[in-house]
Each structure stands twice: as structure tokens, then as C-alpha cells.
Image (tube, rainbow, N blue to C red; front, side, top):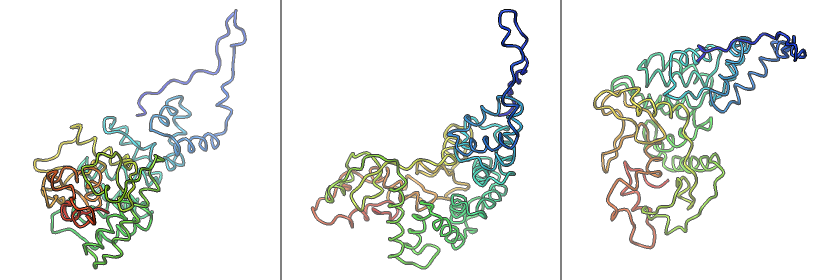
Length: 352
């Protein structure tokens, strides 16, 4: 990432007979104090829309390259600045993330931890990095660690720790992580790793839908009359995250780390061992670390999920149209069809 460096042009340009004004033009950048340049670069690293917006500045000259690697600049690097694509992964990209981790950047600790755990198959180092971010209340890291605890990822099936998974998930949910809120809701509703509380679990699931709606892109909302929204054969676009209220909203944006995992394995850059599969939710990207680690759909058995949250969300996005034959999707009566939807739902996941 930093191998190619442009040589800094000398501030003194030889004068030409026909252009005497070009002689000895000063470089205004040299006149700025280092602390001001570091401040500007910190703002850039935190607001860049992609890694190249930040890296291209560092390649401008030696001074910017040096100051761009200042710990303060790296500690402020935002999620988009760290959103390296799988096809661009290299040792220099790995080194850049490590520099950000050493500077105290929690987003980079989470990203590198996930990459090491799932892609580079270094579970110990990956878990340590995610824990480093989780200690600083990084919600995605807390949720990812809870998924690892629920599945016993990187270990044997007997090493699952459901209570630890619920505790981590609850902390991430408290910090507003939508997937964690949804996961905790299903745990409470099913009594999975915690005492069953159907009312509270259901309330959390509705809260997750509401949070999803609030964070969705500002797209026009479409409302479907209540009886028609239960016909699963509908071709209405969008993700029915507020299906309980008859609304459709845009599909949630994939987190850069999940996109990296998905691209890593689907592109062939990383190979899964025989018998291992990716989480079927297209916005996840997590792979199994051992055979039969993830849950399978209890109806069709053709899809698998790393978490109840992924299962519920994929049911709404896609799988409810593929799980069973068409004649079992459409509800014939004109009254209450919610119970019917729950019966054909995948893995006891009904409309939420």
C-alpha cells in the first residue's frame, strides 16, 4: 500500500529565459506546521469515503506519508477508510491495519480480528483483537464474540458457552447494535442461554425492526394493506423489516468487514475445508470453522445460519420465497394468517 511513493518535487525550479517567474517558487505545504498537517490528516482519515481517498494523499510526498502514519491520524481512521476489499488484500494492507491497531483504533482491531479469525485461520490472535475492541465497548466486536460463543467457533461443539454469548449480546444490544438486539430477542423468546421471557423477547424483536427502519436509507416507504402483506408470493421490492406494520424499507447496508469475508471466500482467495459452508444470509459472510457448526433450516435443510438473527433476517429477505412449494406460502383465508406463516417458517422463525 505504501510501496509506491512519488518523489517530492523540489521547490526550486530552474528559471527559463522565456519564463523567469517559475524560478524558485516556494512550496506552501512546507510552511505549515506539523501539528496542523496532522490535524488535517486526522479529519481526512475519519471522513474518507474509501481507503484510496486517504492513501492517495499519503503518496503525494514524503512529508505527508510520514505524518499520515502519525498515531493520532491512524487512531481516527473511520470504518470506510479501513474498508479494504478482499481483492486488494496484501501484506502492506495487513501492516496498515496493524499500525492502526497499535495506535488504539478499535475499528481496525475489530476488522483485523475478524480477518484473522475467519480468513487467515488464526483464531487465537483474531479473538484477542476483537476482545481488545470489545473492552472499549465496540458493539460489532461484542456481537461477533457472542456469535463465536454461541457456536463454539474455532473449538469443539462442547465448548459452546451460551451464557457468555447472551451476556456479550446483551452488552452489544445495550450499545444499539441492531443484530444484537434481534439476536437477544430470539434468545429470550426461545429461552436459549437465558430464562425464557416471550413478552420481552418479542418487544426486542419489534425494537430491532424499528431501529432498522430509522437507520435505513431515505427511500420512499410503501405500505401494503394488512391482508395482502401475508401473501409471501408478492414481488414487492425491499426488505419487509416492518412487516408487522405493513411497511417495506430498503435492505440494510452490508458492513465492510462482512463484505470482506463474503468476497474472500466467494472469490476463491480463501478456501473452505470440505463440508464447511458460509452463512446463508447474504449480508453476513461468516464461514463455519467445523462441520455442522451452523444451524440448518428445520423445514428444507438447504440453508444454514451462524445466528438466529441472520436466520430471521434472511427469512424476510429471501428464504421465505424458497423454503417450501408455492402452494404452501399463500394463505387461503381472509382473516388471521400469522399462525400459518409461523408454521411454514424456517427454523421456527415467523414474521417479526
